[in-house]
Length: 194
Image (cartoon, rainbow, N blue to C red; front, side):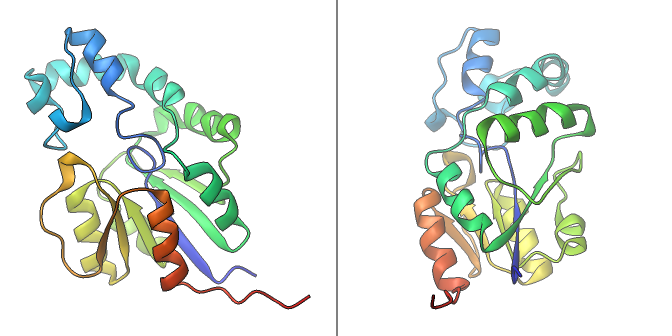
């Protein structure tokens, strides 16, 4: 029986934080790179109003999610973890991309126990409902709020758009290998002797 359950964001955490950039660059005739994205609100870098960006995004959202590559090492580490931990993906994606999301997980062979698309960045209630023991996130305020509300470790995947100060208990990691090292320290698993 698995003792620990993890809450895991999808976009920018399991998927590469650069996934949106080719689509944005093509749409707006830009050449943005990840270092240009200093805020989570992409309209600041693109320099368009929220409504215009939202309307465009809704027309390409499913395609973007379908073509997003997983972060380096994410697949291998999540596959290893799945033998020992329950993997609950809690995403701000809406129900309209449910099928795209599930198909992506199947095609990419990324293991899961549960996938929940809540349609909001407010993930505290879903994390509480599923009684997760740790959370993985790329959005700074989500990471801090989840940690403070639930008093669980939150691993924050480092990007230029989330480099504000973090409290103790929110752990900044550069990649999935570093996340794996932290998880092995925080949640040691006893391996049965054969």
